[in-house]
Image (cartoon, rainbow, N blue to C red; front, top):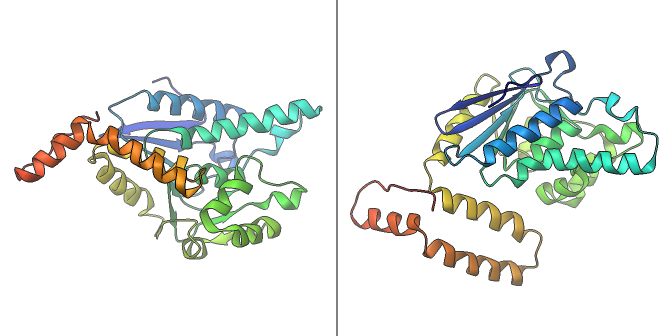
Length: 261
């Protein structure tokens, strides 16, 4: 894996850890950061030995949003459209991963920073975290998935309240409305994210990948077609090595040896 300028990349056991690393800019999203994030996620996706991804900004701040300088050079409508599509594609690399992703959030997660978190499967926050989409205050809206993913996470009325107001909410409110899954003291957030990642890394990879695909794809379908999609996907599970191994291990009262196939 290549070295990076704006992120820190580590591997522990079967877990990939991405740390945003622009502390002088409160980890604001830059072109370089988005390029490096996109590249490292593609690399992780190709690695069968990596089972779970944890992304964090460290203990002080997750990400204060997109660097406003990103927009200063845009002069044409076509440029603006291609640009927002590219940002959306870069952040969306996390949701396209076939592996589970966990955002470990300390401090501020604002604008594009919160959109990045929302592209992850799970969000764990520190008790001092502040989460918000303040783009309305610039005469804009969060265009990297914010207006579409947020309602799917917390419902349309609560999403509109956050989007219209632009004010950040604290971690307890984010937990109450379902925006984050768990809240811990900031000293424990990464540790708890790693504990969750280790537990998931032990699960049968083929089933994990299938579950993620079923949930994400099913949200885009009506219930009838989603249930049919689930049934057809079960045939792949039924024929897999992991299912045969898991059931045999259960009956033989031994530990299963999952292969991810």
